[in-house]
Image 1: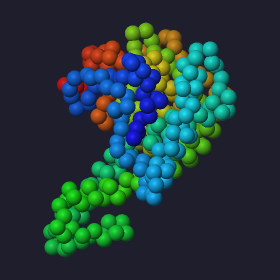
Image 2 (image 1 turned 180 degrees about the vertical axis):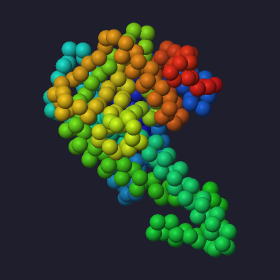
Image 3 (image 1 turned 30 degrees about the horizontal axis):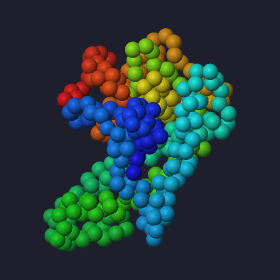
Image 4 (image 1 turned 90 degrees about the vertical axis):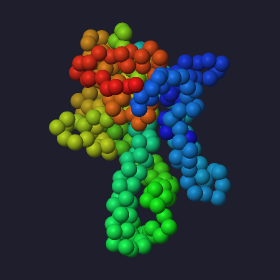
Length: 300
């Protein structure tokens, strides 16, 4: 199942024989490679729930598709149309809802939860063995360590937690959407000549309204940055009290678009889990970028 939907990835891809292919750059090092968008940013059973039949088990997958993916082509066309200067209330809702859903549905939240849980289980497991006990309590469940390795126990907890995390994540999306509909002004930055936006397997960047404070992901006053193709960056800012909420801001002249493309690409690198994604030219230029305000990391 895709945690970054194909409807989004296709706009960074090129077509060949009716298929969409994108270039990927491994974060851990290695060569740039081409892949079908159907084969990347996927994880088996990520949203699958317990159920008696396929329809029940796939209810979250269907929800994401019906609420946020269907109609994305129209959203994309609106955002990239330079003549479009305002959004209807329905269009504004759909833009905000897609960006928020893309932020929260990502498997980065599963990875974070699993890392925290693995650490807790490791500490409890080792303490239980040191005390020569056979079990310990995790949340409201007593876990036996008899005949189990630490790795087996951690894997068991991750598998049990997966449906709960998937359900909670899906439910958490609705409140931020409701708040951001009231707060957010939508803008699109068009890349300067010679610049491209790249994306990743964790494509939404969030920045706090008060840069002196530690950012909280659920805070509806965060700004969200979402590259939507190699030439356009969608931004949501809590400026509705200062600007007309239904206007569609556009920025394409002067030095700022070039600065934002460099910043956005660096943020994508920082927050990605496994891959940067984009065009071949865009990723090659990112690899070759000179040191400066953002020193390049070694990338293989």
